[in-house]
Length: 351
Ligand code: KG4
Ligand code: ZN
Image (cartoon, rainbow, N blue to C red; front, side):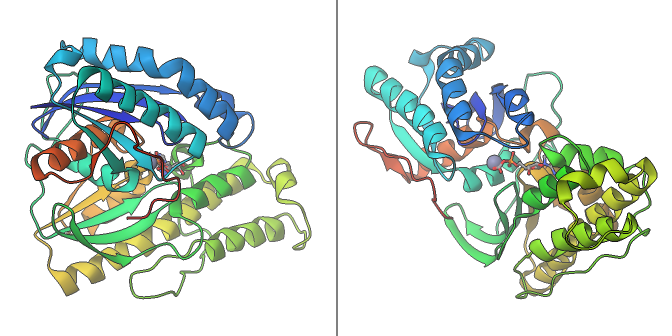
């Protein structure tokens, strides 16, 4: 059974074909990130316009790369939220049109839930992807770490889950992006902080751990602590503008700040995962979302002795494969079926 997944919630226009919820047949991602980078973050209007240009070529390429055609597709899955309204609209309208003209079932899915399903892919004929080869089993503890979400979720089964904790302010990816900005690094900040941190000393600057609910997360205090640290390192007080910090910090300081921040941000997560593992004894643990690509996260999880499944790096950030995989489970369970004539976007959709 082949499902096409369409994802346009932010700046990536993505489409993918997944077979039987396990086999990645194609994964095409066009990003408008280069245009946004010079503005220091995603500009919604530019993202929406880029999706309009890219959506049909990306869908065509996904079908061709999977050596298939629309007539061989069993169902269409599309991200209906959460995300930027103008961006979501392009994917949803494309999916609705295809569903109507090809008379195939349509599923409107949650982007954040989709990230988790990248872990259900087990193989691919495509080169350059690595998989663990088996699917996670239930109960499954999902660690969801993206630009907008930081959540621990316990799945008892597909579509039957309990949220153990959420971000009470900034999400972890957002904190990476904001610290990168302070250090004069380009958007998105996660990958560049990770690279810079490799050259730094993670114990150089002890930073505070947030003390919020048992499984909740807070990153705004850590972000402010990094700001105050940068200001004090250059001998300025709290009124010194964050946009001018990077000119006054030297390269060694920047690397040590990146490493110390990354270590603390990640340790907060791993400590909570260890606690949840003891309390709930899940049969499997998975990590998902853009920050799941972080190498310090993978190192700390490995050292913790927990067995954690993580998607291939290319399937951590936004992609259509995770949406197609979730779409497969929607299709076989009859969940989230949408009317192609009325499916609407839900920009603030929660899990
Ligand atoms: O899941 P995602 O692609 O989009 C959202 O749904 O938000 O996550 C994007 C976030 C950004 O904040 C980005 O800086 C972060 O993931 N990110 C990383 C890494 N790669 C992407 N953070 C830390 N380390 C990385 N290697
Ligand atoms: Zn995402």
